[in-house]
Image (cartoon, rainbow, N blue to C red; front, side, top):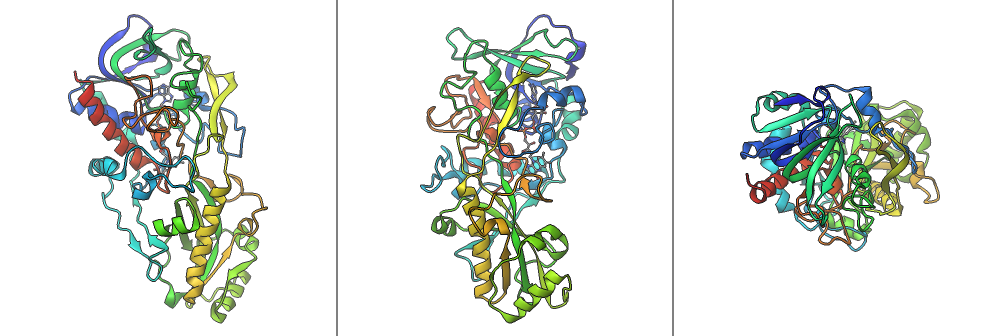
Length: 497
Ligand SMILES: Cc1cc2nc3c(=O)[nH]c(=O)nc-3n(C[C@H](O)[C@H](O)[C@H](O)COP(=O)(O)OP(=O)(O)OC[C@H]3O[C@@H](n4cnc5c(N)ncnc54)[C@H](O)[C@@H]3O)c2cc1C
């Protein structure tokens, strides 16, 4: 059933739910539908309506206080379906390597492993309408260094549209639109959640109360920590924040132009005219001491002019033909039937860094909650990862006389500034908000445990990419759905009706 909280005056508490979920985006809708199918009674609170509105998206505004980033009300959407209303559909699972702690990546390592998520891959793939296989293959003669990696592409599924009829028809789910979570109330001992408090837009100060057995925060990787930091009515530092970890370790995938390549068409081992995707092997990551990264090599026609003029320095060029080609390439006279070439773009995993963070701004929104302030940071490992991925591919091409690679200028000298979001087409970040309520074995290392429960609060859970302790090179939505189905299984077993 769907209700509009704007049309309901605050009154008696609504009680008796098995699971109360705040956030009707990818994670929240997945969880509600899954638990309802298991016979549980579900409350789903969604801050927006069925369409985008200024009154709701205004709440997502907040200052950028670190590196340049996208406006926070553009980087995510605040209405039914959440940010799936404009995601692009790129899907891939985590690699086994992503879950393991690595000495050269501080703060890396998950308390769970890839098989824990693989159990949910088949169902997650159905939800996202993608095949559930990822055919990665070694790059010929470079099998120790790189693999071709496969992505799958969701249509893309818009969760609000796809599940609207199921949500309307369900007698197990109460979905309240225009229902803004504004407080989470605890028992006196502060070890369990008792109620969600909510406000609508008609009266932003009136409190609507909802109670159940378990509670889930699924408001996205910036909003979930912002709200946890704001919930101070009983905990002076916010909920789950006894160790000052909520909001820290913010990561996105750092997207950057790595350079350009030219190659003799006859030797070109990749798919002509299409973007081809590579990733480093575990051996190469260990050898170069880099994080995971997705390297994307695409067609000549998509090379931005600015990149060509800036990529002046050829690192690898040991073949006369390709050297000649490189000259004509830059003169704009490409002998198309003989040569190919194009751009190199890298989407790299960021090192989890406690100083890269979401915190609270002084300014408040219409509900009196302090806005999110984002201080996104890039560090040396992030630069090192991109540089050594591009150099590695350049070396592979040069050694086999396939072609050459020119590094983008910013990678030639570590003193050069790292390019900023908005400086170039494609350049910047992936709109992937991760790490801010990270999963860990112990509360000194993270905010949630391996079952996604907030440490110290045994019936409060988090769903979404804020729980990723590291982010691999994959886009986050498929792993979000896998982790959410895993959470559903846990809730159904432990909070039975
Ligand atoms: C331009 C763009 C392209 C992208 N492309 C890709 C891609 O190709 N592949 C990929 O994997 N990912 C992509 N993403 C990221 C993807 O959209 C997110 O990973 C995904 O939507 C996150 O799901 P979520 O449920 O955690 O958050 P969301 O989908 O953002 O849902 C959060 C929900 O919580 C609600 N909410 C917020 N505050 C409150 C409150 N106080 N009370 C109640 N409800 C609240 C919001 O209205 C929203 O509905 C892209 C993102 C953008 C912006």
